[in-house]
Image (tube, rainbow, N blue to C red; front, side, top):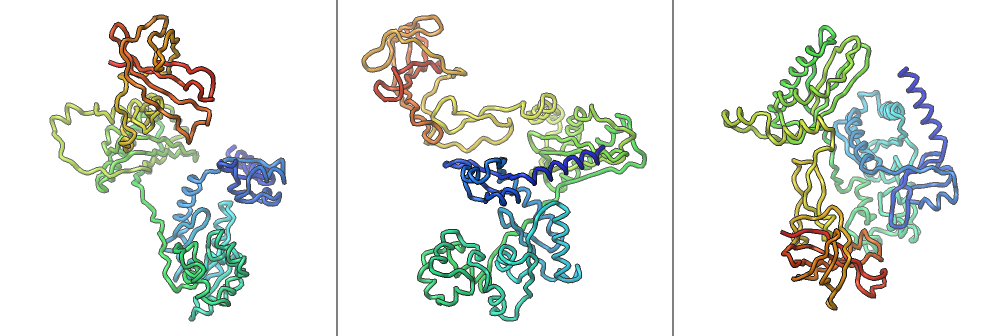
Length: 505
């Protein structure tokens, strides 16, 4: 049955690949294409094109939202996986990898076989790849993008040999900004070999004010030929704490399962203590005899390495486990860990407060009620009262405050939604002297204001009206926070409306 599902999924992927498909991102001028599959490229779609233009060429083109953060995360994992071909690797976002293969090719039987192994490995992951081997990172990038895939340039004895091997590549192979490439083409410089025809001094005078490597052809050319260093940031894989148990006999009973989980939690606590860390996310994998794998994940409100607390939380997660013919292996991994220093606790206080700490309470409520069920409000930098807070997990640090947006005076209680009030009489100054709210008429005896709050221009439309807020007190001494929406003659609607939004102490 699993094989049938895999075949069905593969068939659906092949069917989807045969249809024009593009990934889009929203911009101020409308959806823009970020990537296109082969069918979409054949239909005329390309990266950077507006979706409306692509639909003109191919009306039946399908779309899906792009995920830049997900792509970067996948590229990072791919960079760690690519270290099978070299001691270190670096990301070349958004879709490239650089791997140091110095003194490595002989392990694969030569550079040709190394390239063949790269192509085969990527094909096994259903990924298209263009690769090249060169003495410098810039030369490898240029060859992989603008030469035949699999091109190999041996380390030259002199720089002229490498320059001769790359002279027929286009100037875009220098990894320059598009506007710089356009300037070079207007100057008649279309290939790398033509840059030397007019001399370095002429190019230096033309681009002397551009310090960024992506905006200066001479800097990129020197990096490509190895004349100046090009620092790269390698991807360093982080080893997550992991403990496991391979059982001599498969287990089926819950009591034995709880005992193994307790042993794993104690092993994990010792592992985390040795690293000076605490777990924030734990993943428990259970391997059954028939090959089925069940994974249970746990998110913690604060970093911890208390084995009893971990066991207590996993107890609820394991209620629906089907052991089948038996579980033969369990693995506990901390996929997210944070520094947690050692500390000397008060033994008596620890005994009294054991299990009732705020973080432990949040964890137990989250496990019982579900992820995202427990949160707390925190201040948010916005002048609009109903937007002046956000909800976040209870024990995460509050966002940095912005002093210029601090509120001077706000009511003790804000209504969940502003309620419209009927103004019976208003003074020429603009504030009401009598209004009706919830069926009761209020006489205004004192007024403080107005405080004008303009709409947030980056998210509101141009027709959004201004607000003038007043702190008022009625004849019984009760204080309210009201505002007038709009100004007479502002051209953004009819007569202004009044709302009550808060109650003062």
